[in-house]
Length: 87
Image (cartoon, rainbow, N blue to C red; front, side):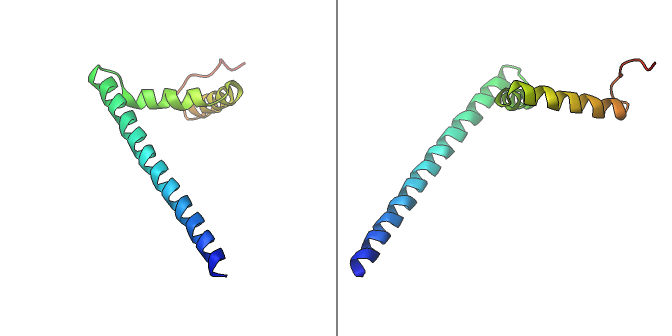
Protein backbone atom coordinates (compact mmCIF):
# COMPACT_ATOMS: atom_id res chain seq x y z
CA UNK A 1 0.00 0.00 0.00
CA UNK A 2 2.82 2.43 0.83
CA UNK A 3 4.28 1.89 -2.67
CA UNK A 4 0.98 3.06 -4.19
CA UNK A 5 1.07 6.11 -1.91
CA UNK A 6 4.63 6.79 -3.04
CA UNK A 7 3.62 6.62 -6.70
CA UNK A 8 0.63 8.90 -6.11
CA UNK A 9 2.81 11.32 -4.12
CA UNK A 10 5.43 11.39 -6.90
CA UNK A 11 2.74 11.90 -9.54
CA UNK A 12 1.17 14.71 -7.49
CA UNK A 13 4.57 16.36 -7.01
CA UNK A 14 5.19 16.10 -10.76
CA UNK A 15 1.87 17.80 -11.56
CA UNK A 16 2.53 20.55 -9.03
CA UNK A 17 6.04 21.21 -10.36
CA UNK A 18 4.82 21.29 -13.97
CA UNK A 19 2.07 23.75 -13.06
CA UNK A 20 4.57 25.92 -11.18
CA UNK A 21 6.90 26.00 -14.21
CA UNK A 22 4.01 26.90 -16.51
CA UNK A 23 2.85 29.64 -14.12
CA UNK A 24 6.37 31.09 -14.18
CA UNK A 25 6.41 30.96 -17.99
CA UNK A 26 2.98 32.62 -18.05
CA UNK A 27 4.28 35.42 -15.80
CA UNK A 28 7.30 35.91 -18.07
CA UNK A 29 5.08 36.08 -21.15
CA UNK A 30 2.70 38.51 -19.42
CA UNK A 31 5.67 40.72 -18.56
CA UNK A 32 6.85 40.57 -22.19
CA UNK A 33 3.37 41.56 -23.41
CA UNK A 34 3.31 44.44 -20.93
CA UNK A 35 6.68 45.61 -22.29
CA UNK A 36 5.37 45.55 -25.88
CA UNK A 37 2.34 47.62 -24.86
CA UNK A 38 4.73 50.03 -23.14
CA UNK A 39 6.77 50.33 -26.34
CA UNK A 40 3.62 50.94 -28.36
CA UNK A 41 2.47 53.60 -25.91
CA UNK A 42 5.90 55.22 -26.05
CA UNK A 43 5.58 55.60 -29.80
CA UNK A 44 2.15 57.20 -29.53
CA UNK A 45 -0.27 54.30 -29.92
CA UNK A 46 -3.36 54.06 -27.72
CA UNK A 47 -2.97 50.82 -25.75
CA UNK A 48 -6.68 50.55 -24.96
CA UNK A 49 -7.40 50.52 -28.68
CA UNK A 50 -4.62 47.99 -29.27
CA UNK A 51 -6.13 45.69 -26.62
CA UNK A 52 -9.55 46.05 -28.27
CA UNK A 53 -8.08 45.17 -31.67
CA UNK A 54 -6.39 42.09 -30.18
CA UNK A 55 -9.75 41.06 -28.69
CA UNK A 56 -11.55 41.58 -32.01
CA UNK A 57 -8.93 39.61 -33.95
CA UNK A 58 -9.54 36.62 -31.65
CA UNK A 59 -13.20 36.45 -32.74
CA UNK A 60 -14.31 34.72 -35.89
CA UNK A 61 -15.83 36.93 -38.57
CA UNK A 62 -19.49 36.00 -37.92
CA UNK A 63 -19.15 36.51 -34.17
CA UNK A 64 -17.48 39.89 -34.72
CA UNK A 65 -20.17 41.05 -37.15
CA UNK A 66 -22.91 39.98 -34.74
CA UNK A 67 -21.31 41.91 -31.86
CA UNK A 68 -20.85 44.98 -34.05
CA UNK A 69 -24.51 44.86 -35.14
CA UNK A 70 -25.71 44.57 -31.54
CA UNK A 71 -23.44 47.40 -30.43
CA UNK A 72 -24.70 49.61 -33.25
CA UNK A 73 -28.33 48.80 -32.34
CA UNK A 74 -27.71 49.72 -28.70
CA UNK A 75 -25.90 52.95 -29.60
CA UNK A 76 -28.76 53.99 -31.88
CA UNK A 77 -31.31 53.19 -29.15
CA UNK A 78 -29.37 55.39 -26.71
CA UNK A 79 -29.12 58.24 -29.20
CA UNK A 80 -25.36 57.96 -29.37
CA UNK A 81 -25.33 57.11 -33.08
CA UNK A 82 -27.54 58.13 -35.96
CA UNK A 83 -29.59 55.28 -37.28
CA UNK A 84 -30.97 54.76 -40.75
CA UNK A 85 -33.65 57.31 -41.67
CA UNK A 86 -37.10 56.27 -40.51
CA UNK A 87 -39.73 55.78 -43.17
